[in-house]
Length: 139
Image (cartoon, rainbow, N blue to C red; front, top):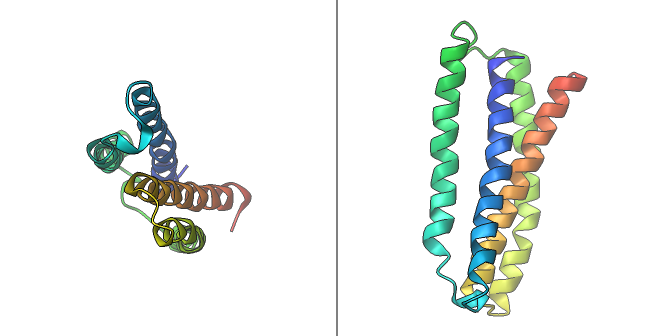
Protein backbone atom coordinates (compact mmCIF):
# COMPACT_ATOMS: atom_id res chain seq x y z
CA UNK A 1 0.00 0.00 0.00
CA UNK A 2 1.45 3.33 -1.05
CA UNK A 3 1.97 6.32 1.22
CA UNK A 4 -0.79 8.17 -0.64
CA UNK A 5 -3.27 5.33 -0.18
CA UNK A 6 -2.54 5.15 3.54
CA UNK A 7 -3.22 8.87 3.75
CA UNK A 8 -6.57 8.41 2.00
CA UNK A 9 -7.57 5.71 4.48
CA UNK A 10 -6.69 8.06 7.32
CA UNK A 11 -8.68 10.88 5.68
CA UNK A 12 -11.69 8.59 5.23
CA UNK A 13 -11.62 7.49 8.87
CA UNK A 14 -11.46 11.12 10.03
CA UNK A 15 -14.30 12.05 7.65
CA UNK A 16 -16.50 9.37 9.22
CA UNK A 17 -15.55 9.31 12.91
CA UNK A 18 -15.40 13.01 13.77
CA UNK A 19 -18.78 13.94 12.27
CA UNK A 20 -20.31 11.03 14.20
CA UNK A 21 -18.83 12.43 17.41
CA UNK A 22 -20.21 15.88 16.51
CA UNK A 23 -23.71 14.53 15.78
CA UNK A 24 -23.74 12.53 19.01
CA UNK A 25 -22.79 15.67 20.93
CA UNK A 26 -25.60 17.62 19.24
CA UNK A 27 -28.13 14.87 19.91
CA UNK A 28 -27.05 14.75 23.53
CA UNK A 29 -28.01 18.40 23.88
CA UNK A 30 -31.52 17.98 22.48
CA UNK A 31 -32.89 16.58 25.74
CA UNK A 32 -32.53 19.93 27.47
CA UNK A 33 -32.38 22.53 24.68
CA UNK A 34 -34.46 22.96 21.52
CA UNK A 35 -32.30 21.89 18.60
CA UNK A 36 -32.21 25.28 16.89
CA UNK A 37 -30.98 26.91 20.12
CA UNK A 38 -28.00 24.59 20.59
CA UNK A 39 -24.65 26.37 20.51
CA UNK A 40 -23.23 24.30 17.67
CA UNK A 41 -20.56 26.70 16.38
CA UNK A 42 -17.68 25.80 18.70
CA UNK A 43 -18.22 22.01 18.50
CA UNK A 44 -18.54 22.24 14.72
CA UNK A 45 -15.30 24.19 14.43
CA UNK A 46 -13.61 21.81 16.88
CA UNK A 47 -14.72 18.85 14.76
CA UNK A 48 -13.27 20.44 11.63
CA UNK A 49 -10.07 21.48 13.43
CA UNK A 50 -9.67 18.05 15.00
CA UNK A 51 -10.02 16.42 11.58
CA UNK A 52 -7.30 18.66 10.18
CA UNK A 53 -4.99 18.27 13.18
CA UNK A 54 -5.42 14.53 13.55
CA UNK A 55 -4.93 14.02 9.82
CA UNK A 56 -1.66 15.94 9.95
CA UNK A 57 -0.47 13.98 12.98
CA UNK A 58 -1.58 10.73 11.33
CA UNK A 59 0.35 11.52 8.15
CA UNK A 60 3.43 12.30 10.24
CA UNK A 61 3.02 8.96 12.01
CA UNK A 62 2.58 7.14 8.69
CA UNK A 63 5.71 8.88 7.39
CA UNK A 64 7.68 7.86 10.47
CA UNK A 65 6.44 4.26 10.23
CA UNK A 66 7.44 3.96 6.57
CA UNK A 67 10.04 6.64 5.82
CA UNK A 68 11.04 5.12 2.48
CA UNK A 69 7.57 5.72 1.03
CA UNK A 70 6.90 9.12 2.61
CA UNK A 71 6.09 11.83 0.12
CA UNK A 72 6.60 9.63 -2.93
CA UNK A 73 3.80 9.93 -5.45
CA UNK A 74 3.96 8.62 -8.99
CA UNK A 75 1.77 9.54 -11.96
CA UNK A 76 -0.82 6.93 -11.01
CA UNK A 77 -1.18 8.49 -7.55
CA UNK A 78 -1.62 11.91 -9.11
CA UNK A 79 -4.23 10.67 -11.59
CA UNK A 80 -6.18 8.86 -8.89
CA UNK A 81 -6.08 11.94 -6.68
CA UNK A 82 -7.27 14.14 -9.54
CA UNK A 83 -10.24 11.91 -10.38
CA UNK A 84 -11.21 11.47 -6.73
CA UNK A 85 -11.08 15.22 -6.14
CA UNK A 86 -13.15 15.76 -9.29
CA UNK A 87 -15.88 13.41 -8.06
CA UNK A 88 -15.78 14.94 -4.58
CA UNK A 89 -16.05 18.40 -6.13
CA UNK A 90 -19.09 17.37 -8.16
CA UNK A 91 -20.79 15.97 -5.06
CA UNK A 92 -19.98 19.18 -3.21
CA UNK A 93 -21.28 21.39 -6.00
CA UNK A 94 -24.57 19.59 -6.38
CA UNK A 95 -24.94 18.99 -2.66
CA UNK A 96 -24.69 22.69 -1.86
CA UNK A 97 -28.06 23.15 -3.55
CA UNK A 98 -29.70 21.90 -0.34
CA UNK A 99 -28.13 24.45 2.07
CA UNK A 100 -28.73 27.15 -0.53
CA UNK A 101 -32.38 26.17 -0.60
CA UNK A 102 -32.52 26.26 3.20
CA UNK A 103 -31.07 29.76 3.16
CA UNK A 104 -33.56 30.87 0.52
CA UNK A 105 -36.51 29.80 2.66
CA UNK A 106 -34.87 31.47 5.68
CA UNK A 107 -34.42 28.39 7.84
CA UNK A 108 -32.52 28.86 11.13
CA UNK A 109 -28.74 29.09 10.79
CA UNK A 110 -28.38 25.81 12.69
CA UNK A 111 -29.91 23.87 9.80
CA UNK A 112 -28.03 25.75 7.10
CA UNK A 113 -24.63 25.32 8.77
CA UNK A 114 -25.19 21.66 9.54
CA UNK A 115 -26.45 20.97 6.03
CA UNK A 116 -23.28 22.56 4.65
CA UNK A 117 -21.16 20.46 7.02
CA UNK A 118 -23.03 17.32 5.96
CA UNK A 119 -22.43 18.08 2.29
CA UNK A 120 -18.72 18.63 2.92
CA UNK A 121 -18.56 15.29 4.76
CA UNK A 122 -20.44 13.42 2.04
CA UNK A 123 -18.17 14.96 -0.61
CA UNK A 124 -15.06 13.95 1.35
CA UNK A 125 -16.32 10.40 1.81
CA UNK A 126 -17.28 10.08 -1.87
CA UNK A 127 -13.95 11.44 -3.08
CA UNK A 128 -11.94 9.20 -0.75
CA UNK A 129 -14.03 6.17 -1.67
CA UNK A 130 -13.46 6.76 -5.38
CA UNK A 131 -9.72 7.03 -4.76
CA UNK A 132 -9.63 3.81 -2.75
CA UNK A 133 -11.67 1.94 -5.35
CA UNK A 134 -9.26 3.12 -8.04
CA UNK A 135 -6.29 1.97 -5.96
CA UNK A 136 -7.84 -1.45 -5.36
CA UNK A 137 -9.36 -2.12 -8.78
CA UNK A 138 -6.70 -0.42 -10.85
CA UNK A 139 -6.49 2.77 -12.81
